[in-house]
Length: 418
Image (cartoon, rainbow, N blue to C red; front, side, top):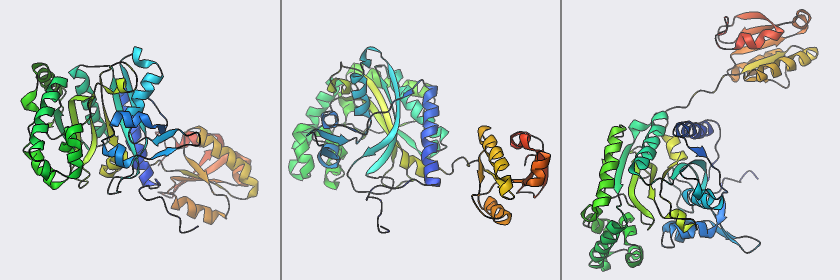
């Protein structure tokens, strides 16, 4: 059994790793609540159609990366590769399309079969936010500003750059799509096999290609800026003005695209140079057609997701865990009194521990190893007088404290506390 290891592409979260993970989630949860977002939790597996319909059969996620299986009832199920589609499914399933807007936050594991690398796992975790039912540029700006505020609260805003693009409205994208097909068709023989397959079905996906030859052709491809309708340009201008008013710095990057038909207008990424090739830590965009893909009415929406593992790697530190207090009974007869003090401290919100065996010397050694602030010593003499000895393990000072006053002695601001 000693040879068993975590499955490739998964990892255990223990000690400092888990503290970083929890800090990211709790920080994001606190910030999004200031914007009025409520937390939802959806199942980690869904009907496969939730993702195949929403992500598209030509996407790498659907064709190469999804963990799909048939259950014993013959149903095709998929471990969720991302959170947005599941949130939109939940909106429709729970009859909430008549109660818009809905502001949703989520956090949890996602699954993709891909090559593990720095900050990228086959079971990975995301925080995400979706604003469903708002079509105005202000909604996009608010969601982006909220993402910025999460990064700021984590202390990593200055480690990232916000890159921003527009995908225009449907008319803009249709004209752009026609121009892309003409451009790439003229160089069909030079395209990779994947990009040749995408040329007719979804040429926007070619813009995401990592193939070096494809990238050279993409560099000369027409950009959507040439095809924006007046309405789409007004939306784009309004978004940028609002971000300026909110103090959100950004860099325009026409290379940021979303290749699915229901994406439009805003696309953005917070990127860093500290994680090598995996530089995107939080990204999103507007997707006004996804709820309809789930069987609901056409519903405007904007959202983002951030990789918890990648965000955790950017943290310089996490808030220190509170140091415990060690309760040390001196002899078997003191065990009952020690338990009473121990539980009383916990009820008061003080982290308290006791050893299960050993003489006083060994118990004090353990108290020092776990970096306890105090050792509370209780013996027959103390029990008879209704007191304990509170030893400050930093200074060595020992104070006699009433047995029912230990919590008050240890709480912040109480005289005599280290």
